[in-house]
Image (cartoon, rainbow, N blue to C red; front, side, top):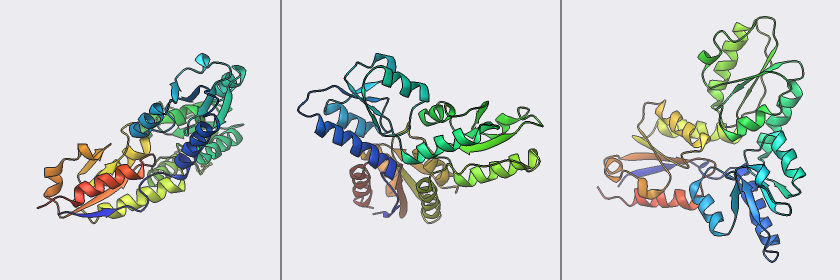
Length: 285
């Protein structure tokens, strides 16, 4: 059977754990009140967790304008744009803010440093965290995923500040900063917005990838930090399998390996990771 090297950092991060605890507390407090409880968008990017809370009666709103007065609304771990928060307050809802503290820190840094500088934000343009971060900028903004996207866009004489989505690859962020600083003549503040947990998780995935024949990454396909773990493994030239549940594992392919690595995104429940590990470790040659 394959030997499994499991990452110690695999599974819920502090921000996800905190968000779900806030939702659980709300469910407990309002159990007798029969009040309507909703999350604004998915509270985290994991389909199994979302299905569990849907079964408990937690609804999901996509449009803040559709919120009903008196209902309880939980702001997702990724945060929301400023205008959404204002809309919810105007609607007279009971608001529970489950924004990850690391995302809140990034929001405040962007607000502080964009008074006189235009924002260059390294991240996924359509990701809810990024949409929220942009709303805190007091200046012009540019979002990019590749340096080539900024070609011809930077103007000499303009002042810029660089920030990143909290789940981006720190080593790539450093490379981007050094390139942009050279282009802009050396004057470019860089904000420390990447979560340390993300950095540790990516470093561990990198270390494990060097020791195995195949990497397994467990987590939601809509989870940015999970996808980046798969990219980190692939960057080491190792095949990588990204699954949401154990049932998706390509067992014959895994059975042919002597050693496989296992890690998971920050919104992946421990029991899902455990089931994947049990299934792999139970394979016979």
